[in-house]
Image (cartoon, rainbow, N blue to C red; front, side, top):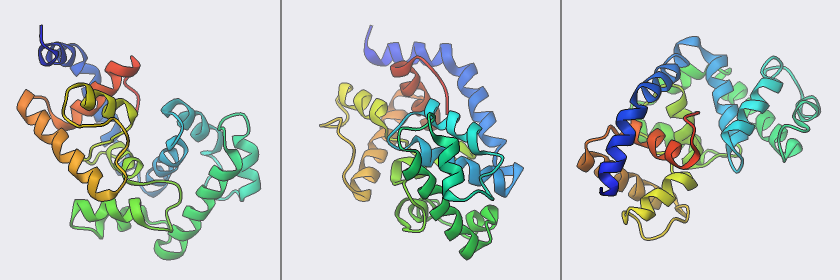
Length: 213
């Protein structure tokens, strides 16, 4: 059996859970500005860490994320994140920027962009958004129900390298290289007949044994 045949069998088995997870993502955006901002915070926590650590951090701060200062957030994150002070600072920096520029109206901000790539670039490269790059910007947008973005974390990159799609499993070193790898993943998804957005969760779950967020 080829790796593509194995991948298709895995997809068939996991498709119901993948669909369920995608439906959960689609429910976030309609919940409004605070839910969207919380998802951005989750991705700030997840950067350089893990999805489970991100989930634990969100549970710890979700009731005060809009009002707490850096020290209060840090106190909540101790024991939850390996860098509680730094991540608390990232959240406050980002919240203050979005409050000043957009009154934390996340939906209004998102809908001000007509180009989906420019929307991602806003979050990936804006110095007001602290602690994320292209990977976590893609993660954030996927987690609020937007489609067509590759989340090129270590599990996905290792898979693509094993499949011979990319030359190295190392993370892309620039936005340009990120986009080039994303195109390769989209082409691969088309070739094997698996939905591009589903493929991300499939590859991630095949490496981790889980389908999280």
